[in-house]
Image 1 (cartoon, rainbow, N blue to C red):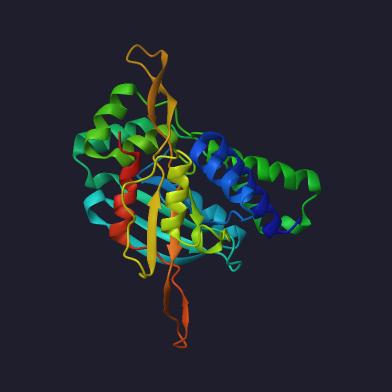
Image 2 (image 1 turned 30 degrees about the vertical axis):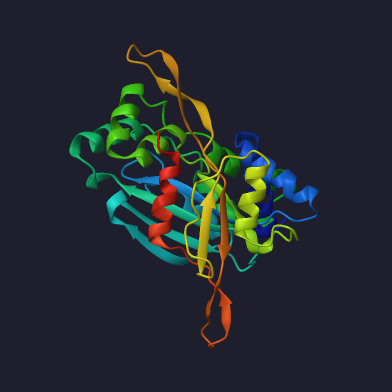
Length: 302
């Protein structure tokens, strides 16, 4: 099994899990396939804390150390000062594999009380990957099939399981006042924040662009963001479904386990326009635009 096959299996499992959790993504997938189109994801987003997170590396590196061993390279860096965020996006040589957008909250930029509460909540984090797993990623082709399958399982667990204890209910509610991003990340940790439909590649004749796709999804009863970010003909246009809510694990004041209803994820749509390439010829824009991303971050606000 090659690194590309490990990557494909991991992405497929993450997409299946996401479709189980996010009804609107599942319904988009089913509608597109019923119309003879294809489902291609433009990018996948992750959220992290740039602060000590126990045994797990802090910030972007927690996820980047995996994807860079699977063929991804840095393709862009971003700063969102009003959200206290920095981010990078990564691309693979296979243009139909999703770009990966990893952001991190600059925790020390928050008010000291909120920053301290976040650090306390994640201080006991374990690392669900170890040096052996990372070493195996560097020599995938030489691994026995059983070890390759086990590696995919461990990578999947790393992304889908929270590495720190269930955060205190009061911490989530208080931190949310300073940063909704922080509250979300306390609850969901390394989980995929969202997948994104690649409108340019969906090949549905009666949904030729993002407007037609939004109209079709609304007609099917899927709640959508009120606006499309980006003007017609611009290099990037984005919108999204509403975010679904989940019952998330928290720790109550008396130490008992509890549940808190909170947002999980929306399904984003992206349509990419043309920009001049290095040779002067038009090529598809592959980056991200800060102001548009800022508006989409708000889709998980509760």
